[in-house]
Image 1 (cartoon, rainbow, N blue to C red):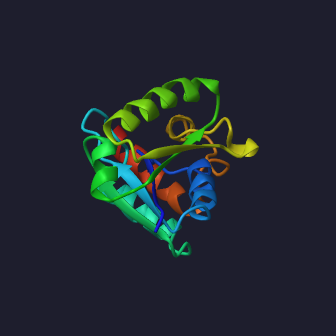
Image 2 (spheres, helix red, strand yellow):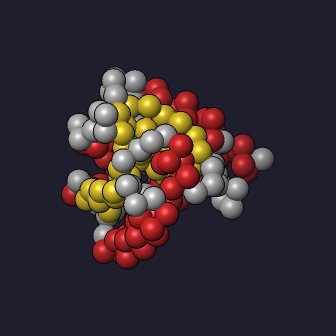
Image 3 (cartoon, rainbow, N blue to C red):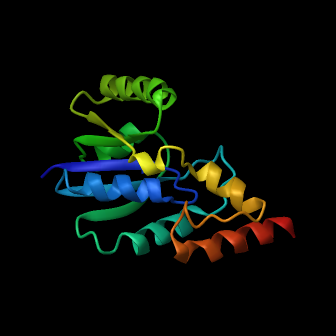
Amino acid sequence: MKRAIYPGSFDPITFGHLDIIKRASKLCDELIVGVLNNSQKNPLFSTPERVSIIKELTENLDNVKVECFDGLLVDFAKKKDAQVIIRGLRAVTDFENEIQLAQSNKVQYPELETLFMTTSLQYSYLSSTVAKEFASYGGDISPFVPAEIIPLIEAKLKNKEN
C-alpha cells in the first residue's frame, strides 16, 4: 500500500489545500492529512478544531484520513509507515524552502520520497495567511475558503477582539 502524508498547519484550510488533497488522493492508496500542532505558532483554530473541519470537508474522499502530529514530520512519516510526502508549491520561493526540508527528511528517512505538486493556477496566490488577513478586516473570503467554515473564522476573529 502506498501511503502519503500531506502535512500543514491548515489554519484555516483553503481551496488551495483542498485542491491538493483531492489531486493527491488519486495518486496513493491512502492519504493522511497531517495537521501540525506547532507550539511556536498562535493559530486561529486549535488542532482538534482543524482536524474536525478537514475531516468534514474531505468525508467524500474514501482514502483520506486526517490526523494531528507534533514534532518532526519525518518521525510522523516513519510512525505511519508513509512512503511519500506531498507538498504544494505556489511559487519559486516555496520551492527554495521545501527542497531543503525534503533533502533533510531524505537524510533521516532514505525510503521517504517528497512529491511536489504545483497548485492549480486559480489558487496560486492563496494562503491561510491571506484568508485570515482579509477576514480580519471584514473582507470577502468566499473565494478563499469553503462557505461552511466562513462563520467559524468570523467567530474566532470576533472572539480574539474581545
